[in-house]
Amino acid sequence: MALLCGACCALQACGGGGGASSPVAPLNPSSPPPAPASASIRVSGLSPFPANCAPSNGETLYLNSEVEPYLVVSPTNARVTVGVWQQDRWSGGGARGILVARSVDGGSTWSMPIPPALSDCMGGAPGSVGYQRASDPWLAYSSDGATLYQSALALTTGTSSAVLVSASSDDGQTWSVPTAVVRDAPDIVFNDKESISADPLAPNIAYVTWDRSTADVPAMLARTTDRAVSWQPMQLLFDPGSGYATIGNVIVGLNGGGPLGTLIDCFTQYPVSGVANLRAIRSTNQGQTWPANTATTIAALNSVQTRDPFTGLPVRDGSILGTFAADPRPGSTTLYAAWEDATPVANQDHNAIVLSRSGDGGATWSTPLLVNGDPTVPAFNPSIAVRSDGEIGLRYYDFRGALAGAAIPVSVWLARSSDGGSTWVESQIDGPFDLTNAPIVQGQLFLGDYEGFTGANTEFLSFYAKVVSGSTGPTDIFFDPANVPFGMAAHAAQARRYAAAPLAGRTASTRLKQEAAENLRRSLMHRFGRDATRENRTATHPSGATAPRARAR
Image (cartoon, rainbow, N blue to C red):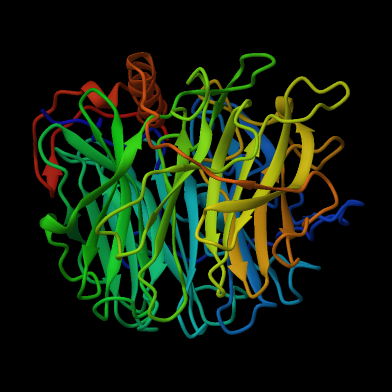
């Protein structure tokens, strides 16, 4: 039985086969507003896109909203930081475009270079690029810092879905014309949830992976060996088999640990009905082959719908996705995975943040540990990073605290561990802020399915969306450097040391498994506009299919 509404999503946009057309009117993003009086620095400003540059398709446009940011730091100069985000989110899915911000002074000040033209709004006029919307921005630096890659989904309703890649040789100041590593018509296939990774040892090589909704929704891969001058034809990375599908593929590489060229693709594998699993599969030849017998299960994904505990309003988050990182120290074979899970919570009625560790390059994984400091309230959207000294950082949101007059108080937290995850120090990054005015996507409050977080020297750099009273829009993007020694608060508020709680002996109840299956079904239905877990389709795999058309993502 095949699943995922294969087709296309209700949005689609990209820069076609050989690359997007030249912008009609060069985009000139506004400078960020002055930073607020806090440790965090506001990066985003007003939308630079012209009015009516893309059709609404009957949806609500959240003008001046910024969501789902991603962040990288140069491997050769920790003062250079580049971020991207969705600008002007639509209620049905996707955004009018993707903006870029860069800092050359460690994040104290930011500039807004002209981004690559990924959508019509970014080209300046309807139809100028050929794609109405963009989504899922991602960045990766080559190991020598000479090339910065950006990937994104590009969408046009009823026309195409594509994965676009652009490259920069000057730390994001200028970008190449986007190239489509894949592009398909919506009634044939839909390409979704891409990410881009650079090889940790070979600076000329980078990888794009995504899920492709033909038949069994396999994980796909495209490689470049010449810094994005050209891309090899897409290849099958992992076929989940009949009745299964993948989503959220992210490739992480080992820095000399194990055979040279070792990569691990981590992803969610889900069934026609039931509970999803986080899984990993390995390549030992720089992504040329991915033997199926190397696929291993990290853990079951027993996550439930995130809701504000005060109002019950739903939040769209990354509850069906994992976040993954490798220890970057030379010769290390250690990997980490973190995700939302309700198993450790007393009533198993909301999600906590849990972590698993692999010490052998993804072949085996530890029993998950409870990480967030207060499991009595829902926590969501974890992002993991490992610094060059091996210290782990986990950044996430939760509903702790109170805010006068706020209907939905949310805070941003950082948990740090220097012993592989056994003990943690947690400190508050930001908040509480009122989530009430965030964009509503498919009926759920939305900050992003994932958010930017990375490590640099003694710092953890956080790039995140929040709602600010009197802001330039419903949400803004903020930057925060937590550059303090381990064991001290990044900010004065609420830092404490505690031991992680192992989940050994703690199992998911029958009710939780049912609710996790329903959360998976609901999440995929919101992404694809139909019940993706129970879809019966006929299709040829992996290159083509006749499938019902899907909605937006």
